[in-house]
Amino acid sequence: MKDLIKGVAKEKFEEFYDNEIYSSTHHLFGIDEFYQLPLKMQWGVIEDWAESEGYELDIFKKISSIKNTYEIVIRNENDADLWLEITKIKSRNEARTKCIKELVRLINESK
Image: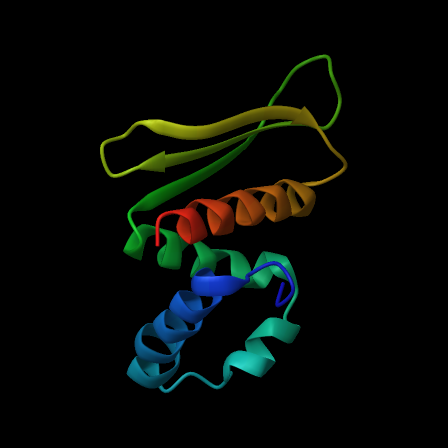
């Protein structure tokens, strides 16, 4: 995941991690160790960070006749959908990766 977060978003994420996750909970993982975890283990921290930046992330697997279809939504504090994609992809982790890339773009553009 380290390569997904860039620019101002990376600075904000690492500050959030240091202040809210690592130092406040005496967590075992520093940021370098966190980046080595599987994405599914990092996802909850990413969601918390997004909320701290004013975004809500939702990923839903669509139960339909089309296999591996996910709805990916990013909303702002006013509950407005900023980004929505319904896409056929291989896995929930791939959906998370797309969502993180878009979140990073939104944060970097709002600096």
